[in-house]
Amino acid sequence: MSWGTELWDQFDNLEKHTQWGIDVLEKYIKFVKERTEIELSYAKQLRNLSKKYQPKKNSKEEEEYRYTSTRAFLATLNEMNDYAGQHEVISENMTSLITGELTRYVQELKQERKSHFHDGRKAQQHIETCWKQLEASKRRFERDCKEADRAQQYFEKMDADINVTKADVEKARQQAQLRHQMAEDSKAEYSSTLQKFNSEQHEHYYTHIPNIFQKIQEMEERRIVRIGESMKTFAEVDRQVIPIIGKCLDEITKAAESVDHKNDSQMVIEAFKSGFEPPGDIEFEDFTQPMKRTVSESSLSNSRGDGKSEPKFGGKSKGKLWPFIKKNKLMSLLTSPHQPPPPPPASASPSAVPNGPQSPKQQKEPLSHRFNEFMTSKPKIHCFRSLKRGGAGPEDFSNLPPEQRRKKLQQKVDELNKDIQKELDQRDALTKMKDVYIKNPQMGDAASVDHRLSELAQNIEKLRLEVQKFEGWLAEVEGRLPARNEQPRRQSGMYEPQNPSAVNSCAQDRESPDGSYTEEQSQETEMKVPATDFDDEFDDEEPLPTIGTCKALYTFEGQNEGTISVAEGEMLYVIEEDKGDGWTRIRRNEDEEGYVPTSYVEVYLDKNAKDVYKPLQKISE
Image (tube, rainbow, N blue to C red; front, side, top):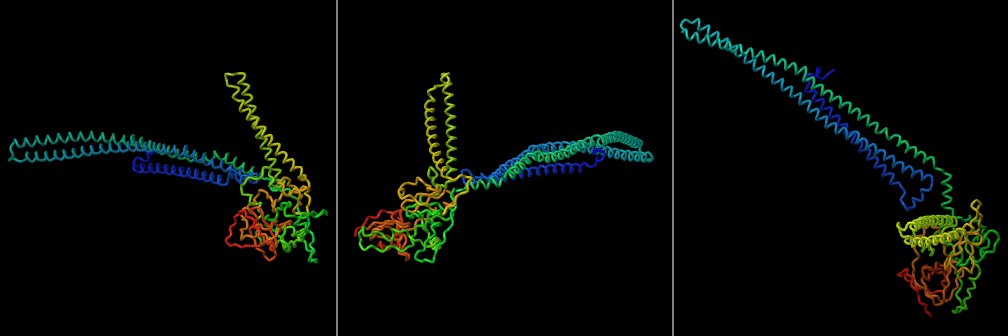
């Protein structure tokens, strides 16, 4: 089966077919190129997707990836990065092994095809030239034969005519002979040309054209084989990355199997456990005695359910942090006095104001009344103004609940120990270097490292002091926390009483005698809050604006919660008018505010007053 013998007369069709084959090859190259672009785009999108969901450094998201489920998700994102890399490998291999190779081959194929068909056209032109020569020789032989026949007829005519001279007859005879000779020469030339053309034609159709067509056939077959090999390579490139992709998928499966719901639940406990004990039972409120209604001290006061005496809840007492009630709302329950204010004294003298009605323990309205106030008021806990979002907390983490504080202190101790180890390693390395310098002075000056060694010694000593300090705090916290495997004791109160002798001291002892977590409060009821997301609820609240000023007509000793002491003649800011209960809310400065009896002050309301804290001069009457 050869194109040279079977398709000897299909030169034009073969030319079209081979051009079509090259077009198919170029189309396949374009297909592979677009496939590589798709692989690159897919890999890029996968990488962007993985990057989009990666946790941001030094952010809250990074802390969330300590759970097994989120760690598995992070592993999935990392494996997707590797997965994307394999698609990039597919694109690179297809570009180098298929697109690049076939592009070069197409150029070579076009040149080879052009050369073969050029030889074919040249052979066609040669045989056409031989054919034209044969036709010319044949026409010349035909013409000479006709001329010789006419010359012979003319001679015979002249020879038969008696009127023609002998000379004319001889001339006609010679002309006839000449034409006959020319005809014979043309015949010989035509015969020779015919033989030559037949030979050329035979060689053309049985030698030249078959050879050219055979080369074209081989070229086309090589093209077909090459495109088949390229398709096989196309599949092999994909197959080569399947094991690696399988490993990526296996790692994702392994990460998914590592998810431990029990461990995650335990980590939630470790992350948010405050160390507080749950509150005790709420006592029954007896409403059958209207004049002696009291709020259950087990729910909003410091008394315990074990029969301890109930200490007076002063305006400067310790308060246990209550984790379930919004803190500024809770304080509004504790700071607003809801008892009738004392009558003004008969004399303006400070000694004439014993504040007798205020000395006994205040009676409080029932819990329902307090929660009505809870829903309608929006007071401000002034100690929260110092808790700015992102601000640095105390060094001993005393703003955190006990359990969280213990964890932070332990973490700090571990970090300091690591720093000490680094410093020790540097010191050991420098010591060895110094020994080398002492033994081999040509290598360096041993005294050059003394300064650095002294610095390291100082740093190590500082770090050790820091470790001792934090370990002391840690031991203090661990000594006052209940055993981690014990059941937390129930407590009957939210707040613990404070020793009156420690009222003006700094917040040093933040735990009550029974081990519960409390906070110091200065001249107003203050509360420290854990540095958790709960802070967001308080950062946005602003202090109440001043609505005027007032002058103290009498001295008032604010010994009960929510009240503030004022001196006779003192000028203060008014932040809340008397709502009909006989109390006016005032502010001395940014950190001191409370309630005083309305009858004890003279109020000057100013609608344009601004909330600016400037010292007010005492004005004597």
